[in-house]
Amino acid sequence: MAQSKIYFSNRAGKLLENPAGYLEALWSATARQEGDAQALFMHMLHALRRYNWSRILINQVGMLPFSPSEQQWVAQEWLPLAVQAGYRHGAIVVSPNVMVRLATAYVTTHVQGLPLLYRSFETKEEATEWLLRQPMSPQK
Image 1 (cartoon, rainbow, N blue to C red):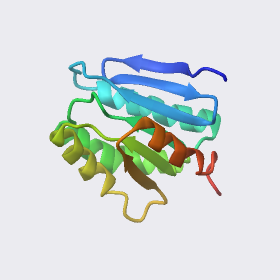
Image 2 (image 1 turned 30 degrees about the horizontal axis):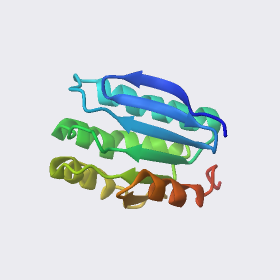
Image 3 (image 1 turned 45 degrees about the vertical axis):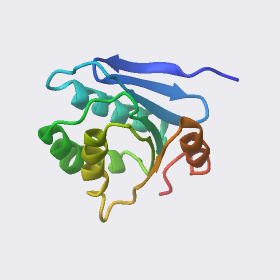
């Protein structure tokens, strides 16, 4: 089976190109600086466009919570851009940290009106199984 390749990496985490046709975001437990999370998100956007993919597996197990400004930026700025780029399905491997879960809930509840579906899972295996049942490319 083909290995995932690193697409981008910084203090916020890394993005992997999965040969099954989706992007995998592995959030880091490392303290990030202002702009690190935005850079990771912008590279997600570039990868979605580059490969015409619609799916992201988001692993938040070790993630530090989003700041209020990061939450707002993702919900109001990034999500609409990501949907324009083809983002349709997000499988989230949830963090045990309640603050991360709350920050994520803020973002995922701001998808009203956008053709985007999020599902949360306790394990990467469950998340991957669901994600692979979703279309690889956005339906236009």
